[in-house]
Image 1 (tube, rainbow, N blue to C red):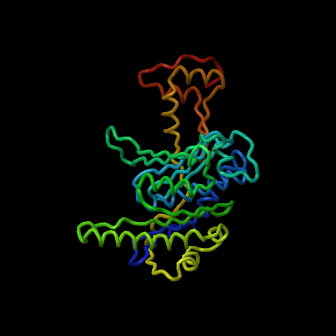
Image 2 (cartoon, rainbow, N blue to C red):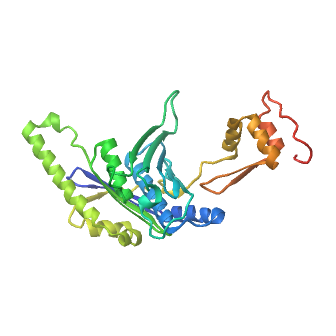
Image 3 (tube, rainbow, N blue to C red):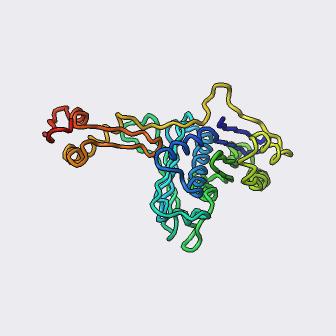
Length: 325
């Protein structure tokens, strides 16, 4: 079963999350393979790391809505998307438009000419009128000459910019498991009110040293260990000298699972959004409107009668000829 394991370091302002996606991840790959064929290994691994990353971030911030992670640029992977809901419903997909080398790294996939970007969007479940989703965007390059080759480093850079919190992330994926470890330094809440300037500086130095020590331990985690070992074994091997306090959820709490938000109703709204003239043009050309979900592979088909019903509220669909009903 896929799992999320949250924990704290007793007496130290550092928290952590360990995610292992098994059944949720293999279901994403199975659906892709059944519709469009399997991803090339580098694309599969990139998407798996993204799926693990959004699950880490969702569990870390407890956001009531969809958290969407996108990577896009000028390589053969035009767009890769991983999305997770507040109940850990998860989906992911990638659009590949060119050949992918077997050993392609991040820059070769999406950042050939420093045009690659990472976008993280927080879309509230119940938006207020006029409320917009929050989106943060960071480049996949440190400067005009240095490309980032690790998705973990991209996210650490994003967390530092968006939350001003030191964060260490380790990610790995193959065709069976997508996993990740997040370690984050917490702010020293209340210190300004409880101590003098000298004491505050000492606390900050101690906090930084504690985080640095734990970060070095976390960064020593190897890809094979993250993919093959269970969460308890990983944490015990890494932090055996630290006092950990587990924050495992109660039995029955939501675990990561495949979930797609597509529906026939949503597709219908999309067709209405195209406009009657465009919908009519597609019907004349193809006889029906067919839309496939890139996340789950579901196919929705609308014939002339279906489309006519979509536009029936005060709109009369023109005749399109015999044989299409």
